[in-house]
Length: 557
Image (tube, rainbow, N blue to C red; front, side, top):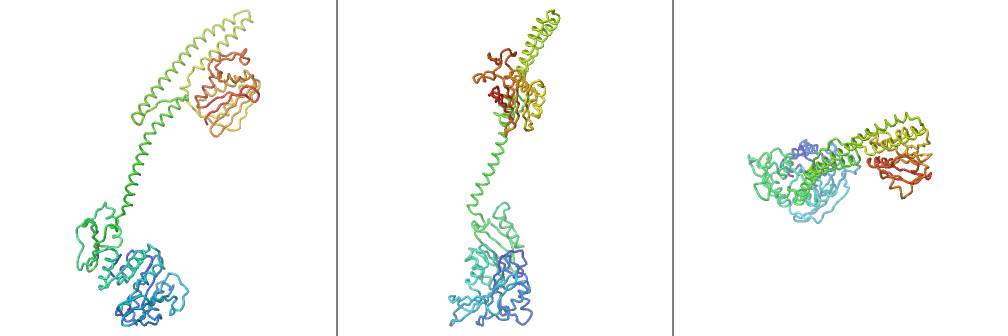
């Protein structure tokens, strides 16, 4: 970036730079008397405005006497820099030869300043002497050589840093920045150097630069507000210039940029690829952005489509476990809604069938209980008490069998789930068997969500079966990572291995010693097994440690 203005105006702008490298004009070049305050005011005017990020400033001054010493004018530079909070860090002497009519020596004093004090030698003695005898300069120019600039830039900056030259002159510092991979900002007010500067940028930056005297900016705006190229250029220009104009559409391959100065307009033509994103970046952008949008749309679509499937699966699982489902609302795609409607119709048919069966059995039970009650009443009038007692026992067995049939056929579909403490339930049920020896082993407090009445019926059937055939019963409750385990052990005759699968079938009774002289219809274990399976669990028949029967129940926690 080049500012064709006084460096003091540039330094007042909101520009950021990392390092300052400059060779200010001598008082002789400015026609200033070194013995007056004018020279000091000139130095102090721009030195007071310096504020590089990395806090380094290098000032190069030429010693035309050729003895390599630092003279009072250089001491003046050091004094004024210290007054503005800058401290001398190092002094170097650059010796270069040039040819006029004969070989002569030219000495350049390189003074580097920092924001903190350093221990340095006598200002009259240099730290390092560079000998550049290979440099040939035709004429009497005493400006910095590119080798000096490159050496100082590489020593004090990193690649990509911004270097500022308040007195760019012929632009040697800018060329050195290009060669070393640094960014460059320069200021120049001398009219004689404008052509040199434009030629410099034409040769090194592939720019076409010219200064239009007494010209003004075009009135027509050609900025494209939705173009990334225009937006980037507008943002950068707005932070540096008050008046500017550019067009990226007037020419096919170049941008026409114009910057307003006091006495004219600086016109710059530069290739569009200098600000346009590379093809790789554009390709990556066009691939990444649509892919991201498509993935987002796919996620939202799949989420809306899978949610009804998940809801249908959960409803089917709940219904399979016997949970009461008030109403199921199908949603999603057409096929999913159709499946949901069919499931809902199936659920209603099964529920209606179970309710009809329960109502029918309830009616049969009521009709059968009435004659059984009359028989009990008539038996009370019999004079033979022994016969009466036997007949009463038969009637009780019939009533118990009737209750077992009704219990097996009753529907659980209308029973709602609830949260209860399993350990307290076992203690409550075991307390009813006070005349039997039931040992409880409960280590943990276990909470379970299920149909409370059904679970009670299941535990009662298992304990009744254990009490019927055994003398000592052990009930164990424990909780694992994923399951609730209940063990019911007795010391009875047990069940042979080949019969364990059959006894879980309804109305199956063993003919061996376990079922001899015992009333029942073979539904106790079947009812318990059905209840456990409807809760998503499993029930196994094993051999207990007392050589009797062990019923192992596993329920999901």
